[in-house]
Amino acid sequence: MNIYLLFILTIIIGEYLLNVFVESLNVRSASPRLPEEFSGFYDSEKYRRSQEYLTVNTHFSLFKSTFFTIVTVSFILAGGFNVFDTLARAVSSNQ
Image (cartoon, rainbow, N blue to C red; front, top):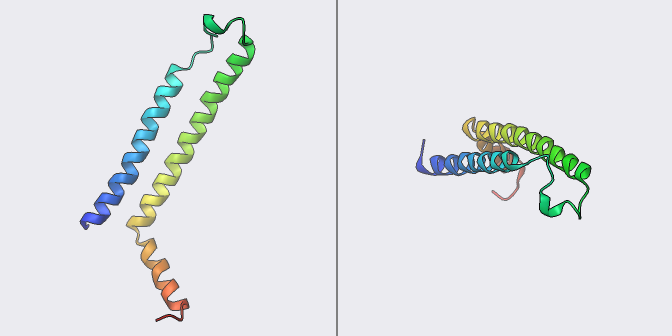
């Protein structure tokens, strides 16, 4: 493995881990109870539903992010970019 590959993989995996950390903090801070400060301005049932939506949406987002990170890292390590580069050069008439 060369240094560029390690750098790119570190950036991809680091971004994924940071995203997981931030999203987990966001979900952990969600509360189904409406804060007292907003009780006169916002319906408590709507707030509870919005917090449920946040949780479900975040879990789906984490699943999607995990899937695409695995696919991207696998594609890089399997040499997928080299295959596409070779195909593009074969099709191109600029050589």
